[in-house]
Amino acid sequence: MSSCNTISVIMGDIVDQEVDAIVNAANNSLLGGGGVDGAIHMAAGPQLLEECRSLGGCPTGEARITRGYSLPAKHIIHTVGPVWQGGNAGEDLLLADSYRSCLELAMEHEIRSIAFPGISIGAYGFPVDRASVIAVSSIREFLQGTELLTDIRLVCFNQNAYDNYSSAVDRIFND
Image (cartoon, rainbow, N blue to C red):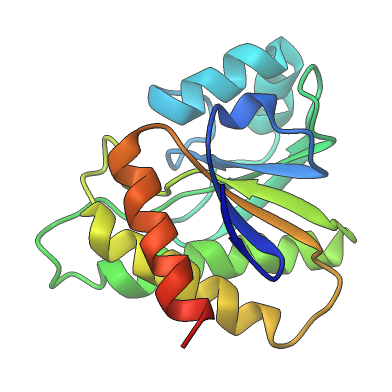
């Protein structure tokens, strides 16, 4: 595990994290899908889908919150990251907005611990080296205004993601 201050990078499964909230890298419908989204919906149970239907979707860069249902986490913060289109379609700003939106919801709901997957680095094709720097920079910037969040985890599903997010934490938090 690589860590600095309140942020840590771990290899693992987001659905197993015992935190106040996990983040779901969702699609705009919030009704489940593949990857992280599908795994979270499956682990949380059918009540999650019912609650998500009532939310009316979510625009890219924004976030919505639901209960955690059968997960160890009390809440799920659903965010829609950008689909990678080559880097000239505002993807960097939208990805930063996704992280910021999640952290703002966490603050509103007095969440002290949160676990993020690599938003947009799977099926949405965002380059992991670029996404990791945006994620960690966005988190660091947000943390400068709060002490409420005491445990922020970046949960990686493979070694490449782990290496990139760990490197970003080391560079950005130790400069």
